[in-house]
Each structure stands twice: as structure tokens, then as C-alpha cells.
Length: 354
Length: 261
Image (cartoon, rainbow over all chains, first blue to last red; front, side, top):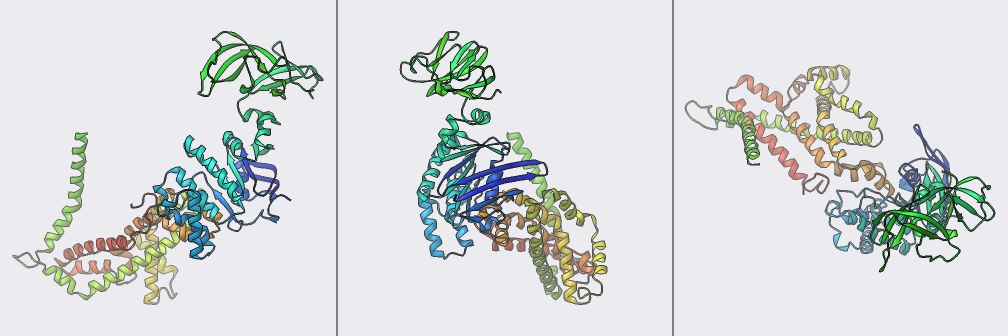
């Protein structure tokens, strides 16, 4: 039996549907991310788990107990907010100990727990400071410690790193993951940052228009997207219109060039499909061997991105970008040069026509 | 830059003169009670009168009661409007402005008619309660705006939800999270309320209450120099009381947005 289970969760507002038919089973200690664009329903789903919103229909169980209508204060969940939501009138130590004081725990126990958490978040010297005297990253660490202080059954994080700058975000996301592993706490993390979701999670729930598009490991979500939305939302994708020329052999035709996908296709021969190709699958030097696909293209623009160089080309009138690693001795194509792109058949994603 | 600085000083000096000159003139006049010499005779006469201390104490207590009741009414209401009923904000703003529109005479007659033949109108304590209730209504525009501004400076929803997720129920949220975080704003509304109650005449006189306002008025109609001395004294005492309140509440509300450092 899953530790946290959501069954047929719906949330309707007078203005429309926010969440529709969400089903999810989370194991104890798992790290799950809700990923999707703004307004996709990920935060509403999280807020229903927290108890801030009441579902229109559906059930939520935590550790076997039905929590669908239980008030937030009785759910024993820890919540970290994008805006930190630290109590401005309380010191760091008082913020962290707030939940324990509300629960009426003895002062000595509160002191010990606060000291333990201050150690975990590396802010032992900041106990008597006030939130306004801390940086954004420090405030979010305190918010995390405050949420963990009550030993919650589930930790919920609502875009906790969105308000921080890029470097702090990366440091803090590693810290969050390390603390989550250390404590083994079941965690649900909402983000619109796909890199964050892929880097942190055991599984990712991709949402769009209030519905779950796909649930899977980061690798499955990235490499084998089940819907056109997931394919386009996760990572960068080149989308080329194609036609099935041999369903059983798995052959497509793209602008007069044949592409092999290495497996039989479900679409009938002659039907239109979309061929989706990630920018990192291409090679210019035949690294994928003689069985690789080859596409002729014209180099049009080069963008230096640091570790990679992005080359923008055109294939039969459609834009296609690919990345080359910025290694020593990298030979870049000249602008206007006719090039041949090599890529493995297994790297091809075939999606319904866009 | 230098030009702007001159203008700033000019306006500051003009503002200070506008504020200080009438006070200085009143003070100077209050020193002329004895013909041909400058002295504190009028002040001695004011302090000798037993009505001064009793009326000041009465109004002081009434002001404190008004502030406490008003805070207990306004903070939860404004908090709830911010949290759950933002669409009601225009209505609440309108209602809290009514004391500016309804004259005090109308208010007090309405109150005495409404509560006629109840313990509120046939006993001294009852009338005092009615006076406090009327002052609470008078304080609405100042208290509501002050608290509303204080609540806008904090993320009410996030703080409430954070407290809820940590197991807190409504009374805990209100008294441990919301009140301390609007304390500085509340204090500014409280000071205005205090000053108004200390000088209020119409309601106190019509309800026949021994307040400071009617006492000043009574003195003005029977003496020449003493009312000026009393004006200066009441001004100083009101400011001292506000200072005392601020001193007693020092530390509370520190480190909140816009709060003292």
C-alpha cells in the first residue's frame, strides 16, 4: 500500500477546472516533483495535499488514513513556501521551534531539536537573528528547518527556490536532496524548472491543463516522453514533420530524406507524424557507426553557450538545432556550409502530428 | 541637488513654524495671568483644581479601553477580510469611514435612543461603557487604515498557512503571528485614537461623563488664562502619554517589516 495516495482528485472553481482526475501513489521516503507550466494545477494539487484547498471530489490518504477533509493543522505535514513565510517577529530559533511550542513540547526538547536542525542547515551561529537579517538562501534554509522540526509525515515544497539566484538555487537544491535522503522523509516538490525536477526527483509528475501528462523517473520522462506535451516541455526539442514510408521497418521520410527509427511504428504507412530529435543526439564525425541516420543540413548560425556550441541549421525548410561539446580541437562548421548530421535510430521520438 | 536641499529646509522650517507658533503664543498668553509679570500662576490654578486630575485620569482610562477593544475588533476583522473576503474590502472601508460622515451628535443620540431603558443608560458605569463604545466607533477610520496598511506589509496568507502547517489553530495564529506583526501599525492607529479620545467633547458632554474634553470646555467658559495653561498642559500630557505607551511597548514588534531596528 502506498504511503501517500491520491485517487481521482478534482478541483473546480466557479471560473473553471484547476485539477482534473489526478491519481498518484507515493512510496514512503520517495521524492516526487510536480512539474509543469504556470497554471497547470501543480500548486493546487500540492495545496490540496496540504489541506489549504478542499478537493471538489476524490480522496487523499496518508499512511492509510483518509485526510481528504482533515484540517491542515491536524495533518502533520511540513510546508516550505516560495516566499519563505518566516514569522518576521520571531528569531531563527523561535521560528524553527514554533511548531513544537504549538504542540506543547517541553522547552528542553525544543532547544535540542532547534539546535539539531540549525546544525543540519549549517546556521548554528544564526539562532538569534531575525528573518530580515538573513539572505534569501538562509531564510529558505530556516523555512526548511522549521518545516522539519515537527517531524512531519510528508514534506511539501512549493517552488522553494524560485526566488533565489541561480547559483544559490543549485547549492540549495543539493542540500534539500541530501537532507531528504538523510531523514528519509516523503517529499513532494513543486517546480516549473525542469532541470530542478530532473536533478532532484525519484519520480516526476508532469502536469498540463490540470491533468497528469506522465509520471516516471527523470530518465523515462526525458528519454521516452509519452505525450507531445511532455516531449516539448522537457528539454529542447527539434520538431520535424514526417511521413511514415514503411511502418514495419520503421522508416520515415523527412523533406525527401529517409530516417530510420529502429523499431516498427504504430502509425500506418503514409500517415503524417512528428519526428522529435533532441539537440544533443547529433554528431558530425560518424561516431554512431554505419547504421546511423544521416540528415543533410545547412549551418546557419553558431551560438557559444560555454560547455557547448549550439548550431542552428535548416533541414528541408525546418529549423533544427544541435549541440557540439566545446572540447579541445572542436572543428565548427562554417556558416552556409552543407553538413551531414549523424544520429542513432533509437534516439528518434515519433509523436502524433503537431 | 543643493537647490533641492534649500527647498527641503524651507518647507521644514515653514511646517515647524505652522506647528509651533500657535503653541508658543498660547504658552506666552498662559504666563500673563498676573498683571504686569510673567509667571506660572495659571498653571498653579489648573493643578490645584481637583477636576483636572480626575477628568484626565477618566479620559486616560477610557482611551486605553477604547484602544484595546478597537484592536480586538479591528485586527481579526481586517485579517479575515485580507485572508478570506478581499471582495468585502471596499464595503469595510466605507463602513469604517462612516464616523467621518455621521456627526458625533447624531451618533450619541442614536446610541442613547437605541439603548434607552437598558443598564447602559440608567447607570454611571453603563454610560461609561456607552462612551467607550462610541469612541470605538470613532476610532474605526484610524485603526482600520493602520491595521490594513500593516497587513499589506506582510504576506498574510503565507504566514497563516505556514502557521497552520505547523499545527497552529486560529487563536494561536491571531495572537502569536498576526498581532505581533501588525503591532507597529496598530500602535500608530492607537496614538491617533488616544489623542482623539483625550480631547473629545461632544459625546462625553452629551452622555454627561466627567471626561477631560468637557472639563477643558467648562474651564474655558469661566476663566481667562487657565484654559491656555490647560491647553499647553494637556498637549504635553498627551504627548507624554503617547511616549509612555511607546516606551512600555518597546521591543514588541521589532524586526517586523517596517518596524523599528
